[in-house]
Image 1 (cartoon, one colour):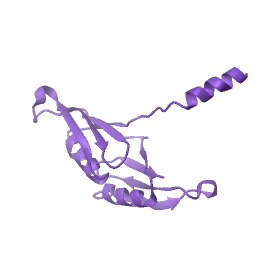
Image 2 (cartoon, one colour):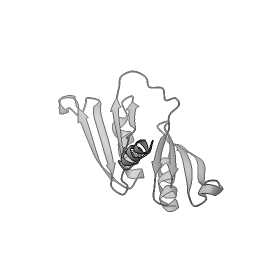
Image 3 (cartoon, one colour):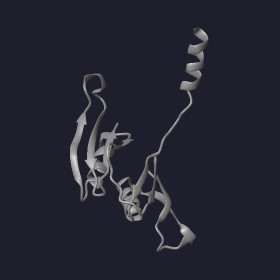
Length: 141
């Protein structure tokens, strides 16, 4: 039994990160430029078939300048229906959450202003935004 606990602790020390991969109907570039601006800038790269700017985005990613996080995306021809998904981003401070949530809400809706979490986590909090592209964001400390 003790060996299993030690193995778990070894695995626990490794970091596993995921990145949301968002799907769009032709507005991937517009959306990623908006997200990069909302998060204070970022290195955004767009890959298109034959490097032709008239072709849809085959793959894109943005690495935010101010925060250690990344989003990825693609354009598809089929109609996209977003259901049962939200993007959760952990930010360092309440001020950062308030700044980003205001920018993400432009053309969308600020669903919930920054609110402190329940008693056991009262130093942390979060906000919720529905952006103009139809994605829900949970921003948390």
